[in-house]
Image (cartoon, rainbow, N blue to C red; front, side):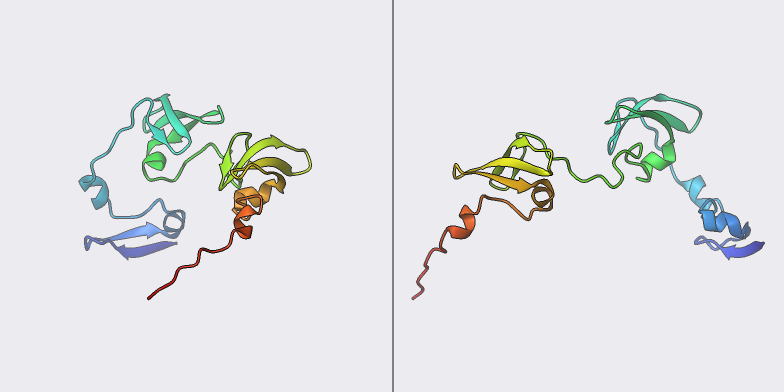
Length: 154
C-alpha cells in the first residue's frame, strides 16, 4: 500500500508503506543531493572495526578486534550503526590478571567465578568476578574500616 508523504523540504511524494517501515525511504531525495558523501580509508577505525580494503561499490571489508573479517556498507559505519562483527553483543567486561578495579589488582583467576586480588593496603582477598566488573567491590574492606576524618567548623 502506498502513502503520500510530505518531506521536510515541503515536497510531497508517494512512498510504499514497507519502505517507510524498513527505513529505506527517509526523504524525497533532497537530502542525498545536498549531503556530501564522506569516504573511508584503510586503517580507519569504527568501534572495534578497522577498515582493511574497499569491497564492492559503497562497501568495505573490516577486521574486528576479535579477528573476523566482514563486509559492511560504508553508510552503516559512518552513521554509527555498526561497531563490531557481533562478537561484543551482550558481552560483559572481561576480568584479566593485572587489571585494576578501584584499590584491587587481579592476581589470579579461579574457575569458580572468583578471582584473587591484592588491595592497595597490602591485603589479599577473593571476590566474585561479577562484583568487580559491576563496581560492587573496590577494596578488601579496608576502606569501610577507616574512620571519617573529623572536621571542626567555627
